[in-house]
Image 1 (cartoon, one colour):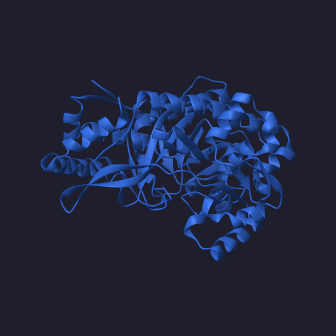
Image 2 (image 1 turned 90 degrees about the vertical axis):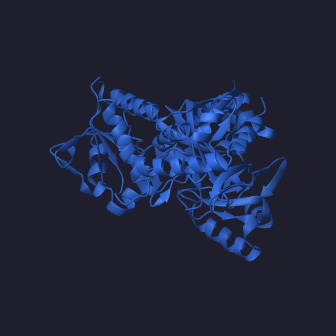
Image 3 (image 1 turned 135 degrees about the vertical axis):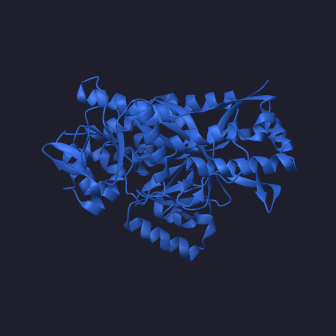
Amino acid sequence: MALHEAIDTYHELLGDDIAGESQRQLDAQLRRKGLFFGDRPLCTVLRPRFLTPEQYRFLQARIALLLGSFDRVYRAAIADAGFRAQFRLFDWEEELVQQDHGFRDASPVSRLDAFFVSEKGGLKFTEYNAETPAGAAYGDLLSEVFLGLPVMREFLRRFQARPLPARHMVLHALTTAYREWSGRSEAPRIGILDWSEVPTYSEFLVTVDYFRSQGIECIIADPREVEYRDGKLMAGDFHITLVYKRVLISELVEREGLTHPIVRAVRDGAVCMVNPFRCKILHKKASLAVLSDERNAHLFSQREHETIAMHIPWTRVVEERKTQYRDETIDLLDWTLRNREHLVLKPNDEYGGTGIVLGWEVDDAQWEQALHRAGEEAYIVQERITIPREAFPSMVDGEMQLHDRILDTAPFCFHGTFMEGCMTRLSTEALVNVTAGGGSSVPTFIIEKR
């Protein structure tokens, strides 16, 4: 079955009456379930993202291979400080990653961000969020909302649509890490920790309700509200035994310092934290440079090397050196300066699109200035890739309209070994990021013709 057949069918079903009815129901459900990013609706279109079973299996197979490669460079980094220098950790991060976190995986919950040009077989992974991946609970609830829309009532007569839930896997990853850390089978007492003003706070509310429905004690707390006393991490009178860390380590340390109660409790072994300090190694955007750099090719099997070459864009840490680009030896800085229209500059440890410079959207002077800054700070340079677009319907002034939108593919990964579930984000801008204010999230369904 061609994917476009399902998409065309869905769009044809969106006549004026059913489109308006579906939009009203979508708006009401978003409000009822609190599906907002700050004060913006999480979803602004009327169609989910569709994948075929073959596409989903392809994603799973390739991601399993890449996760094995990430694990290989992570373990090399833990064993060898010289190798670890390729990731450009800060001094305080070097200090924190010395500690064994007490369970196998440095990133029990993670997310890869990719662009999937399915018609051409193109799949490129541009970032690895190995620290605080958001969106699993949002996606589960958006799937429920869309399955109940009037347009889906008609679509499901002709097609099967299987949602891709992920929040149960988040819970399993947390509890597995806790059991390994504690050596006991008892359930953890979870504290979801992040600043109270973050726009993703509504997802914490959804998550805490789900955890409690599964019999897990759980609260949401601001890091500024917790205390470390008598060998326990406390939020008021709630004893936290497992930190589900949604606050970024860099923000926590930069704002509160290495003596913050969370940092002290984790370092003393008084609380389990997921993801732990060592997740910072792979979370650095330089991790993609480490995978694709010819200096590290000896670490990988032939199959892994082929997978990296096929799915990781050419990426290097910005520095004065010679390196390989395809079959050519280049002077990295000079070559980067001359090839801006094909390149992206990204800070090594930022999120939400902060600091990213798209070479084809700036002039030569701006690119030179950005490259100079990148040479003084920790940045990567990455090759431009093909960006996929799909038509998505939305209501504009009471009428259903179709507009092409850029879409990314953001699969959730667990235990550092496999993929389960997938977030999709849409944008009309080249930088696809909801945090940056330029996008919309939609649920992802696997579809098959009845």
